[in-house]
Image (cartoon, rainbow, N blue to C red; front, side):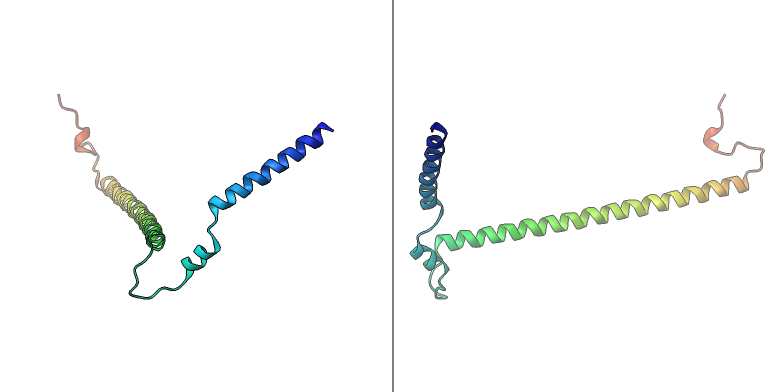
Amino acid sequence: MTWKQALLLSCFSAVVLLSNAKQKIFMQESDASNFLKRRGKRSPKSRDEVNAENRQKLRADELRREYYEEQRNEFENFVEEQNDEQEERSREAVEQWRQWHYDGLHPSYLYNRHHI
């Protein structure tokens, strides 16, 4: 019998808490209908409308900033890869030129020459 009482008590307390939370979370019907009504062009915006517009603008700015940051990062990675490939190709070309023109009489690289 005690588990039934505990279940009933917990259900009752949940209903009471939800009814209190509903009053804090949701608007009254009149406020909600007034909030969505179309106002005249010259009438001032309510504070809620201004806040909602500002939140939308801030979110759009954040998304735009993230998008351009991602595009910039992708482009920087692309440029870095292109530069690395170009550097590798030029290094290979210089190495081939040095091997082709090496006559065997002198050190192949000047900086490998030993100074006594």
